[in-house]
Length: 123
Image 1 (tube, helix red, strand yellow):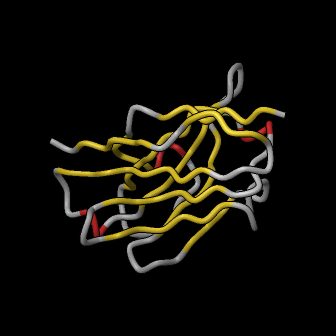
Image 2 (cartoon, helix red, strand yellow):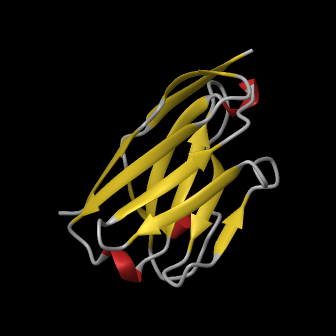
Image 3 (cartoon, one colour):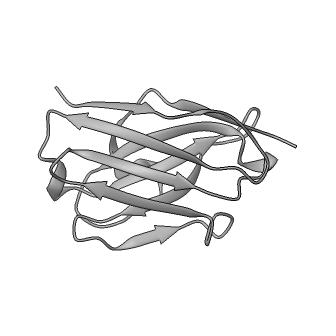
């Protein structure tokens, strides 16, 4: 059984930082792409960042330069370091495991999902 468990969300002031973690189990973590997507209230879920099995990254334009995705294959964990946070970053953040090895931006390309962790950025 594949499980993804996010942690690290919370309330932070604009300009602050948070580091999200996603611990995985039940699948060979190192051979799959990982991604983070987010959903703000009243909006559709949107792509944030993705990381291929070999370390290639893709970011949404809205977060480039502020957010970094990384992975620790020994710990089966993917991270999302978020700096210079803005109120518009407020959302539930979801970790997802891809169907293959390459980075993808579409929801349909992810096979497994975590339960989400809330990030709230106050102005």
